[in-house]
Image (cartoon, rainbow, N blue to C red):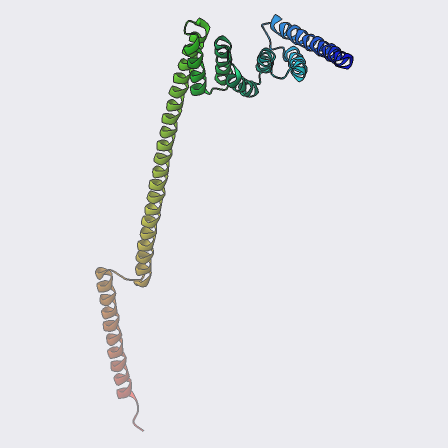
Length: 254
């Protein structure tokens, strides 16, 4: 009986020590978290990082404590790690049994998803929170904001899509213009080639024709000159023959 009593006392003492450490870590985590919220003009990731470490150490002692898990997820979110915090909140949503707590988890899950521009999942998370607490004004506001951002994002996507279509049309126009210009250049080259060929053929024909061709008037003049020369030559021959005859007549007969 004494042995059982001693064992029980030892267990209670050990439990008390762990509980003290747990509370110590939680107090540290809450203190660092509060420090991180002091300056709203910047993101104090150092303080929130220390808070995360403290909450994890508390959860090593009491791993199923909902509040420390919730604070841990919040400290991760405050370090601008929405992907990790979303994972933590999703786990908590499955574990939460108290309606108010479950609604808080869905609200923060929606925030983590919205920061990542995951609009449809964030809208779904806010709606789940409102089904539990339909009068929560903050969740209503975040839901409206998420829906507005989704619409704006879709409009921007449609605008970019139309812009890309216009770019494709311009590219096709430029391509067709280039093809037309290339065709025109080719046609001009072929036309110039044909013209050059015709000119070459014309030049060759001109070269083949006699370059010393004379006019009809010049030919007649030359023919008249030749006839005059021939008449003068015949007259000279006749005179020479007559002179020779006379010389023959006055010669002595031997």
